[in-house]
Structure formats: C-alpha cells, structure tokens
Image 1 (cartoon, rainbow, N blue to C red):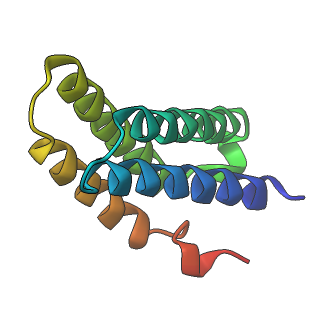
Image 2 (image 1 turned 45 degrees about the horizontal axis):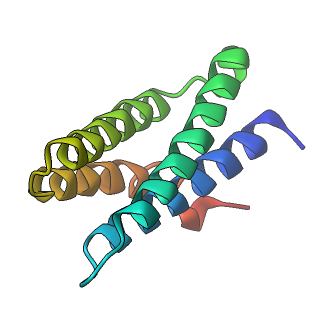
Length: 114
C-alpha cells in the first residue's frame, strides 16, 4: 500500500474514534470511561498518522494535515482537562466541531477515501 493510502487510513480511523469519543460524551447517562477509551484509541491512531507523516514528509506534506494534527491535540487536551477538573464539556464540543470542520473539508474526509 502506498504511504498516502496508509496515511489516509490512519487519519480516517483516528477520526472515527474521535467521533465516537465525542458522541458518547454527549449521550444521556454516558459512561466517561467509554468516552476516554475512544479518545485513547483516537490519540493512538493520530499518533501513528503523525509519525508516518513526518517519516514520509517529502511525500505526504500537506498544510491541512498539520492543521488537523494541531486541532486534534486541542480537542484531546480540552476533553482531558475538563474530565480532570470536572468541568462542563461545552468547550470540548466547540473544539471537536472545529476538528470536524477541518477534517470534512480536507483531502482526508471520509468521502475521499479510495
């Protein structure tokens, strides 16, 4: 498999887990451990994607990938900070929506998978 296809698969998988982490967080009677497990899976997949990205930078270089990595880190940090401090997840939701917008308008969006 070509590096770009592997990269797209990592990013798509990471976003699927990010979506699940977010969606579960806003369910009625949610279980925070499930949301955190999905977030952890997403962190793992984004980390794999980012490692591949920088290992194959000459081939994979795209500003939108770097924006996606950055916004995911903002989302994950907001999520974890709010869990740790027992605060509302209003900003978690805002940061997730920014992440989702970046992803949906990128070459990595689900509809662009081969």
